[in-house]
Length: 142
Image 1 (cartoon, rainbow, N blue to C red):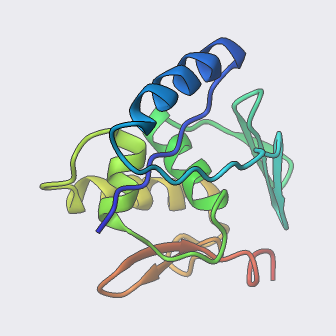
Image 2: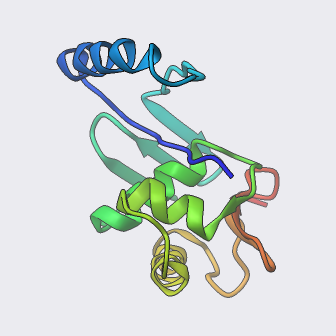
């Protein structure tokens, strides 16, 4: 299984990465997927202002740790896509996922307590049993 790397870069960093990728392109086969991040991810009852690193839930600002915020961004930027605990761990922690399951689960639990109207019956972050999690915007705000 391949690894997914999600980066947010400023202009100077993007140039440096482009140079690195160009140098590597001769050695390995790369597949580039260009996405344009939306500065605001907006869902019923939840707004994520990425450039300001702010999360608003039902009109109130929510304070998140770095790991909670990065996990939320990763999930909300991929709505409806089931992401494994390993994928979340590797993207958020920037490390291999040898023993990631409890770390991801703890962050998801804390995140739900902060952004879900009812953390026991989540509307945004759904558990996909035996696989991982997905950000479900279809049921959000109902």
